[in-house]
Length: 357
Ligand code: TTP
Ligand code: MG
Ligand code: MG
Image 1 (cartoon, rainbow, N blue to C red):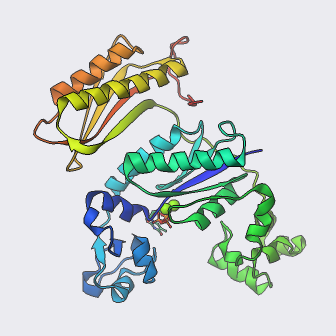
Image 2 (cartoon, helix red, strand yellow; image 1 turned 135 degrees about the vertical axis):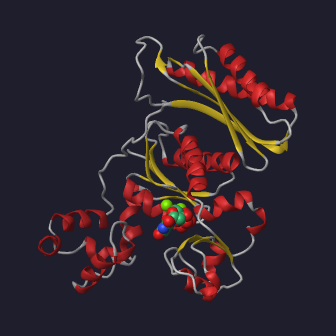
Image 3 (cartoon, helix red, strand yellow; image 1 turned 180 degrees about the vertical axis):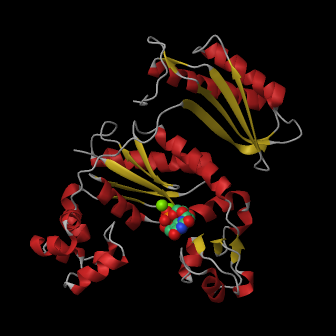
C-alpha cells in the first residue's frame, strides 16, 4: 500500500508575518497590496482565519477586503521573507522522507510508504512532522494522508486549519461522493460550469457519468477527471529536490547571548549532523553556521575543511565560526549547523541524488 502525505502551511504569508509581529496574532490580518484607505488596487494574497470569518479571501480585491474590515491589519508582501521560511520548512520535511515534491511555496507531497507500514503509524508520523515544523519554525500547517496524491490533497483541504486527516483507500469514494464537483482538485471554474451544464453537480455524479460523453466534451482530460472523481490517482511523488546539504537547527526557548549555552547547542547539532553524514556514507567539504538573531536578522558563515566527514572536524569548525563571527551585542534566537560539498565516501564523486533513507 502506498502512503502519501500533503503538507500545506496554514495562512502561510500571514503566519510568517506573525513570527516577527506576535502582536497581530489575535487580530484579523491580511497580506496583500496597499488598501490605500479603500482606493487601493490589487488583491489579497492571503489572510488569517480570523479575517476569513469576516469573509475576506485570497484573490479578493484589496478594496473589497477593506470595505469588509477597515480595521484589520494590512501588511505589504515580503516574498524574500516567505521564501526563506518556506526553505526552512522544506528542509525539515525532507528529514521525514526520501522524496519530496514541492508543489508551491507552502506545500509539498511526500511518499512515506517505506517509513510507515500502517494507517495508525502514518497518523502518528504526521503528528511528529507537524510538531517538528511548529517547534522549529513557529509555523502551523495541516497534513492530509491517503494512498495517493489526489486524496492526500483533498484530506489536507478538509483538515484545515491546524489539522491532520487520513482518508483510507476504501473511504475515498464516499468522501468525494456528495461534494460539489468544483471541489475536486484540478477542476476550475470553466470546467465546473461545463460539467454542471451536463447535469453533473456532485463529484459522485461525475464518477458515474457516461465516459463517452465526457470524452466528447473534454477529450482525454474527461477520462482523467472521471478517474479522480473515483478517488483514483496513480501518479508518483516526483522527488524534485537533491540533497545538497545536511543541516540541523535549534531555536532557543529564550533568546540568548550566553556563549556557553550556544556552544553546547553547536556541539549537539554537530553530533546530529555527523551522525546523519555517517549514516549516509558520505563526506563533506564545507561547514556553515547560521545565526539568527532576536531581531530576525541572520548571519551565515562558512568554511572549507580538509578533514572532511569527521565529527571533531565539524565541531571545531562550527565552534570557531561562531566564536569568530557572532555579533556579541545581539541575542541569538536560532542557531544552525550545516555541511555541504557532499561526496560519497567510496567513489569520491559528487552526489546529486542522495535520499535520506
Ligand atoms: P495557500 O496554501 O493556497 O493558502 P494559505 O496558506 O494562505 O492558507 P491555507 O493553506 O491555510 O488555506 O497559498 C499559500 C500562499 O500562497 C499564501 O499564503 C499566499 C500565496 N497565494 C498567492 O499569492 N495567491 C493566491 O491566489 C493564493 C491562493 C495564495
Ligand atoms: Mg497554505
Ligand atoms: Mg498551498
